[in-house]
Image (tube, rainbow, N blue to C red; front, top):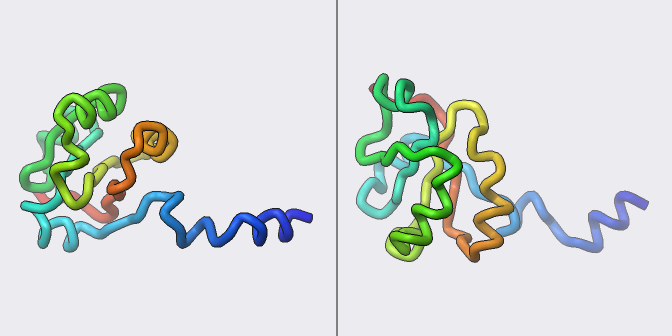
Length: 110
């Protein structure tokens, strides 16, 4: 029954319904095209972050994107998170019709 349910709804894992994951090298190679939002604590951000990243609290993430119309100005919105602080974001992004986001994996450069 579960298999039929999953098959009837398509390939969720490889669809646009979940966020993509990018590595630090991809982000570094696209700094001018990607908006990088670092949702780690201020202390962690100050210890090292991706060049050009904006430190923002998870609570202010969507408001920032909407108020600046930021999602429409960049190819991708990259979320840098050390421990899943932005795990809520796929649902909230989709509610606000923001589809061009991804999560970065890998260590932040110092």
